[in-house]
Image (cartoon, rainbow, N blue to C red; front, top):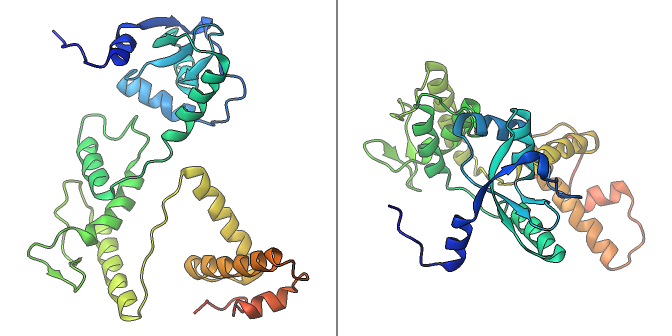
Length: 270
């Protein structure tokens, strides 16, 4: 028998979960969130529903789970488990805003994520229905494996493992993947010798896609050069333009901006 929670609000929610007919529910009007219905449908198909949707009593608007409902409908489901709450319209909007935003504010421990996904990948269904795929896991392992805690391998001054041998990871590593990882480690050594360092940027998927498009656009103005120097150059240029605007300076000519930023199109920023 499940022991009751000491939280009266939680107890109320748990006892108010009910089976909801999807035909009686309404999508929240003006919901700004653009969800990946296809991936959610894969999750429902592989994992079932593991969280209730939230519905406003007076309007039958879905406050949390709009895309889950769309995914369920695409699978031919007619019902979902949900909680109907009696809230005013303004409070309903706050719930929608909070539900959309709070999930974006977290981040990941890449080492723990890699360990979790390796374990999941070894299961009967692999990574199906998780929103991840083997390509993502391979890239993740490439990032974290050179920095696993040192054991019998030789570690550099920063405590990072430098090893050209097999990783020993639970996730199967092909010869090609091993070769790629070895080349990456060698590249890191080369970067360190040149006084260079790698920087990881964390952002949501939509922002990443837009950034990649913007970077390609920057190459039209600054020449074909590596992404890191290109972004560095654009930040310096943006700083010059913003400072000029802040001080109401006369419009700057492009060549003058490049000169102040010490940027020559096609040449990496030092």
